[in-house]
Image (cartoon, rainbow, N blue to C red; front, top):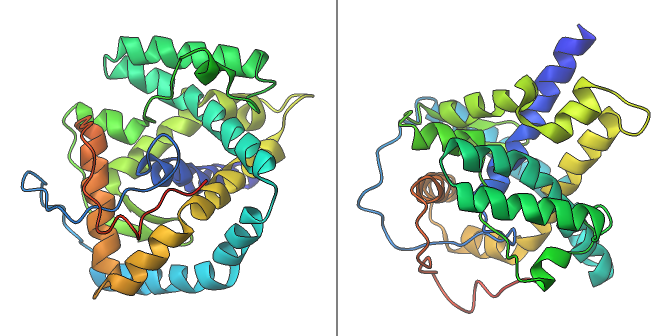
Length: 265
């Protein structure tokens, strides 16, 4: 029973990877006002339940996650940068196999170089030494994106308690993390060693979520203030961004207002 509970928790925490996947390589979300005419219609099969869960998540965000993110933003910039670098470095262990599965061999090799350089010269990823040598960050990839690249449909859209939006396809993709597709999970949870354990994995996922929220405080505040229906806006943002990532569209996203979406250090 304890093992089953742990697997469920890991799958839920894995959704942070999906949430981060709607952000750019720097972890910031681009909010688009441009309608994507090629966007496939995804069924919101459980909209009434989803809206209740969404309201619950909004309440949790206001009393827990947003204050945590604000507190995190008060930390010295070098600490926040180092934390982001470690998180991004760990993310490569999921991105690299998905680069390979999607046939992105150049990105796989560049991300592998980044992982090796930053894990060694960058002291466990605290410093982004690879960028100093001109090996720039690539977009994150996950197993949900790989399934999409292979032609698997999204399935129903739904909202997870605490962790937010996802689809059936993205949730199935998250199962790959507990089936050996996440090297960090393998050395912390699946194979509890004297160097790493479950707590390290959970802490890294929690920090990933807080870091993501902190980088997008202003973006989400502005979205909330300007949206007639915030639930529908978040749904549209999530689905459009997931499709853009799957199609590997590199063009800049048109933003609602340059003043509203200033970059967050």
